Amino acid sequence: MTTEIEATLEQLLTATGASRVTLRRDLPGDYAFPVTDEALAPGVASLRDERTVDLRTQPVVRELQAGRQVVQDDCRSAFDDPAFHRMLETYGGLAAQIVTPVHRDGALVAIVSLHQLGSARRWTDEEVAAAADTAARVAELL
Image (cartoon, rainbow, N blue to C red; front, top):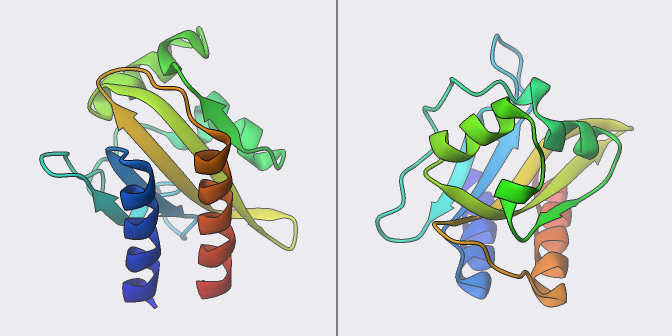
């Protein structure tokens, strides 16, 4: 299963030319939504072991819990929340993102995130749809 999921994430990374694609799952334990799978562009750092950002308090996760996909062309202007801005730096200079919820029985069970590091970018309708398609595929594989 993980190999299929990682291949699916890699396809999204390749199709968009982004910096990183992560899958976070809501697993039992002290840390909510750890990165369980990811695809990385050359030279981009992994987030698998990152545990300093508590996603449960992040404004993006509140949007996902409400069932909404989050599309940010310029993350720095998206929220005034200081914890959100610390997260942008912790994640390697996160500048733009598409974050898509994976729900099962009304609960948020996973998150697919597409990251652009360094500078903002305008996501195309095709890239937004590709992120949603990837989340749907991941839902089938979980």
